[in-house]
Amino acid sequence: MRRTVAKSHTKRCPSGKTRFRDHEAATRALRRTESSNRMVRPARAYECPRCKGWHLTSKAR
Ligand SMILES: [Zn+2]
Image 1 (cartoon, helix red, strand yellow):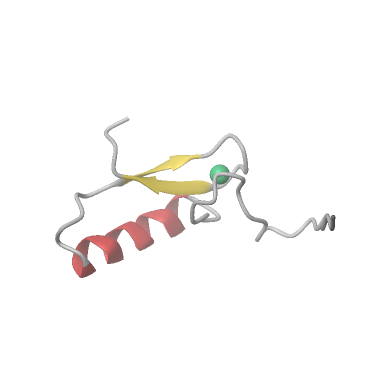
Image 2 (cartoon, protein in one colour; image 1 turned 90 degrees about the vertical axis):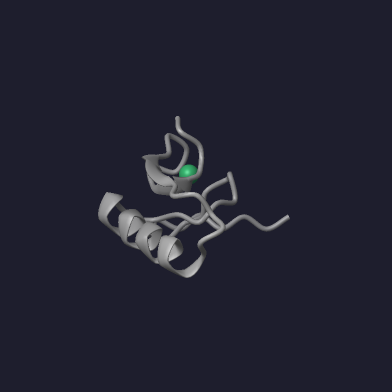
């Protein structure tokens, strides 16, 4: 069982979701998603307590 312990800011989140470094990056990706996929309801960005990163969610809260 390999375990990589890297202190880079590109580490993955245990949730498996796409991780963004900050709110701005998440918001940018959010806008791109809205313009490229009309079937998906506008999501919002939230800060993840697990990876200290940001994710996008389609839920209201
Ligand atoms: Zn996370």
